[in-house]
Length: 158
Ligand code: HEM
Image 1: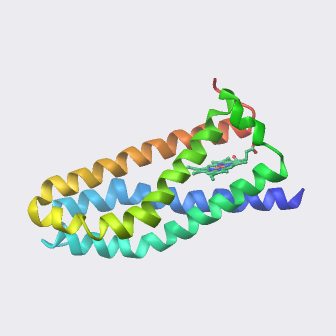
Image 2: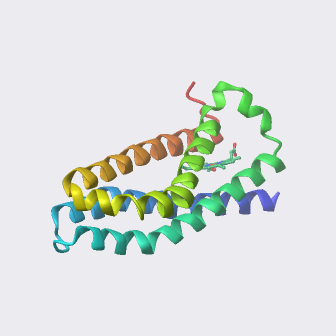
């Protein structure tokens, strides 16, 4: 049974590091960058924050995915995916897939190629969009965490 406990510990630690970072970026760093608190070159400041965090987030996403699927396999939870009461299992996989796509495909191919051009053309609009995307991801993540903690401790909500 200890391997399940270890998988759960690592899963939650990965989620704390990853979503905690998203929360800090969304509610503290991005608003400050948008206001120009760190200087007028907002793109450079944003890239300095983002470049340090992106590898932590990628590592955490990989660890959360591995430990999550390990628990599903070991506890044989596959049939939960056919039951709407376990909507939070679907939510975990959806949020995970969304972040994995953004971090491994969106970040190198869109953020670094298209975003700087958009900032050069219309910085207000570009940063406002980026901030709104972060808010949506953060809200989805919190709903998922709420559902996952409640659900895995017997409170199914639906
Ligand atoms: C590939 C994606 C994922 C899979 C396969 C997965 C799978 C699991 C499984 C099997 C459990 C244990 C459920 C139980 O004991 O009944 C769990 C717990 C949990 N997961 Fe995930 N998960 C994934 C992604 C995520 C994401 C993205 C988040 C957060 C946004 C998340 C947050 C949690 C939380 C908070 C718990 C509850 C821990 C507890 O209170 O014991 N998971 N996950």
